[in-house]
Image (tube, rainbow, N blue to C red; front, side, top):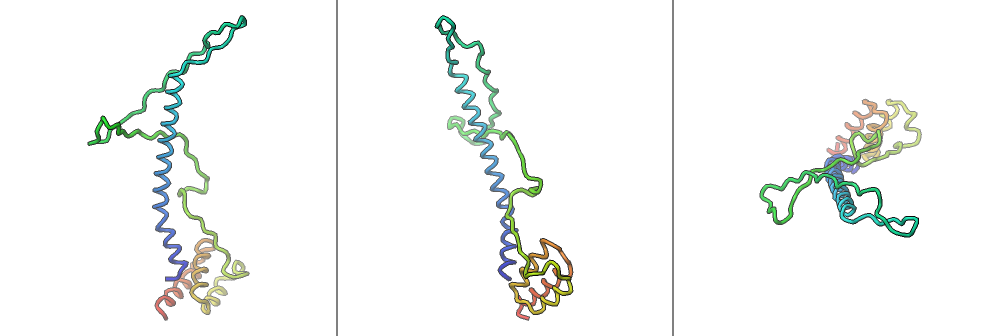
Length: 171
């Protein structure tokens, strides 16, 4: 198998793992944000507001009472977990979710492939196929990769595949 095909295959097999890891990281970040918000609310509720001064120099409490504490998040203990150990799982709360319009599939590797040779983009499929007949496996792999992400000409892709298969079998 040519190196570029191996690289492409590896990238394609790695994508689901990368997506899962990104999902776990996002879930963890959301949980940390929720816990931090709860701590801030608790600290605000526990400390009295600082006094303000009147025109005669006496201090008086602020007129605005502190915000009431937020309701406790739903907490579910894990089956079999010791309640005294403090092990609880909290439900994730979605804070915000956004992505670029082109990121429909989520995070993943991005590969840019240059033209296999100068003037490739202006060549006809027949001209490219003629040139592939004398190309080595590396050029065939680059043509296959470039064509599959650009023009997608079926005749060029089939010929590149056929010649790559012949090169792999030694024929």
